Image (cartoon, rainbow, N blue to C red):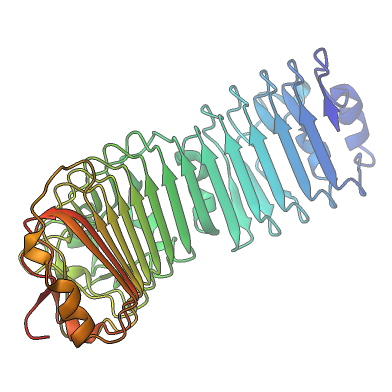
Length: 408
C-alpha cells in the first residue's frame, strides 16, 4: 500500500529498469495486491517492462493521482520508440481506477493486454481515457463506469456479463454499430443511471440500414440479457429505435426477466411496436416517474406477451392511456399488480364500486385488491386467465372503464 506520497514520481528508477532488462528482467513474482492512493506527482504506476514480471498480481487499485497518465508506462529513455507487444497479467482479477483525471491509457500505444482472470473493472471519474486495450478477460466480467467515457472500453464489452454505467455522456446509444452488438451476447444485466446524452439503448434502425448492404439482419438482440435498469436518463425516448418501414423478424431481449425504468421523462414506449416478439421469461416490470409514457408497447395492437409475469408496478406515469395482456398468452403467474398516478385529486370513484365484489366471485384465488381515485383507461383482457393474482392496487385513474375486457 502506497498513499499520500506527494513527491513520489516513480516507484522504480527508469534507468535501473533499463539496465536490468538487458540481462535478467526485474520481477516481483509474489506481489498479489498493489494499492496506490493520493500520490500527486506519479505519472505511471510501474514501467511496462516491470509489468511483465507481475505473474501473481490479483488486485490493482489506483486513486486520486492527479498526474497519472498511464497505469503501466514507458520509461523515458524509450519514449518515441515504436513498440508492438503483448502484456500478460495472468492473475489479475480486480482493477479499480478512481478519480484519475489525467489518465489517458492503461498501457503505452500499440500494447495489447491479456488478462484471462479479470472479473471486475471499475473506472470512476477517468474522463480522458481513450485507450484501454484489454482484449482477453474472464467472460464473467463486471464493468462499472462512472463519469468515464464508454468508447475506450469497447473491447471489454464482448467479455462483460454485468454492465453498470453512471453519468456517462459520449454516446447517443449503447451500441453505436453492428459489430459491437454482435459481441454483446454475454451480457446478462445492464444498469444505466444519469446517461446525459443517451437517446436509446440500441438503434435498430441504424443496424437495419447497415444490413441493406451487408446481408441478413441478426435473429436476436441482447439474447442473454436478464436484468435491465434505466434510471434518470432525461433524453432517452426509446429503448429500441426501430424504423417503421423496415420489416424485421428479430427478437428483442428474449430472456429478459426483470425491467426497471425510472425518471426518464422523454420515454413514450418501452418498445415501439409488437414486431419485437414476446417475453417468455419476463417476471417483473417496474415503471416509475415516466411522465410521457403512453404504453409499454406502441402501435395499434399494443399487446404485451409475457406469460410468466408475476409483478407489474406502474407509478407516476400520468400519460399512460392503455395496457393490455394478450389473451392468447395465459398470464397465470401474476402475483402483484400496482398502478398509480400520483398527485391527482378526484372524488369520482363510482365507476368501480362493484369491482371488488365481482372479482372475488369470479376469481376465488384473489388475495388482495385496492381500487381508488382512478384517472385513465386501464384494461386487462380476459380476467379469468390470471387466477393466481394475489395483490392489485390501482390509484388515481378516474376514467377507468374496465378492469377486464371481455367475458369473465
